[in-house]
Length: 360
Image 1: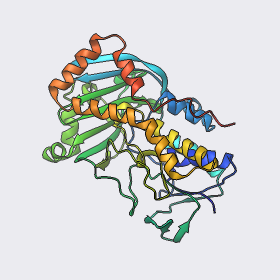
Image 2: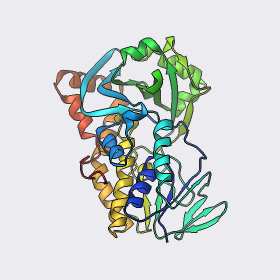
Image 3: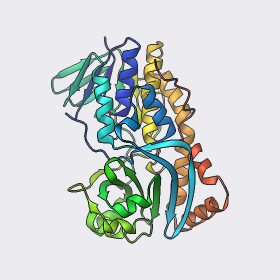
Image 4: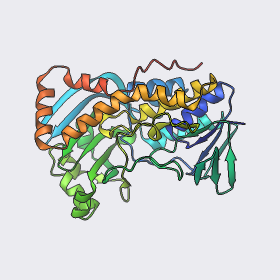
């Protein structure tokens, strides 16, 4: 039987492309009929860029914007540093379309608009009937499938909006800016097409007390690091939203034969910018190990070894950043110690970007 991959995002497509190269042409199902905008900071770390090149996808040819530096803001305090690795910024709609096209030309079957309703007992229930496979890979991103839930996440809302803001776009050339505020944090960076991507996490009680997005945006525009967005134009009719993402989740070997990829395996806080790197690495590692005859538990153990440190460090930084004094102390230290912010960026990357050699 063919391997079955649930989810045609970064992790699922990466696994599908490499499995096909190894002669194991999988079946891939994706609930959405077409690539679309997703809640994502759209930051491609050095690891993510290397993985994409190895898969035969060239982000720069798709219009990706180079990112060379990072800024952290808390009120008017800030710390900045050059990134210790090459990075790019590219919208998920464009990137996913390229990966889907690459995967669709490789796999035995690619079913768009097919939803996995339940996973259990070695089978996947879909509206068209049950599917069985020699190996089932769960790569459904932030969305859980019935029968395989992750632990519930905190009461937080994730939101994303694109803006056209020419002056701020010029100011942020080559820069990703992370702004911490009471009740959450926001990431702002340029993407292709002269746009800015604002992606943020806010505490649920804060969001509800304010009454929703317009009031939350007004609150954000009072932050010095985001104020210039007030001159811009929102490009989506309404922001994308998602709730209760389980940041800090790390899947461990479960003995059930299910291969958990991407956000189903490891959920790193968004401000670290390594979510896409983890997704791509997990897909390529799963393909490599399955082709070598390994089982799901070995894969999950190896992926856990690569993700435990960056996710743990990112969660510790997030806990510190929730408190005003913690934010101020951290920024003061990062600004005072040369190379500290660059080192933090390096330590929160998934392990060894060269561990997966680009496939021929």
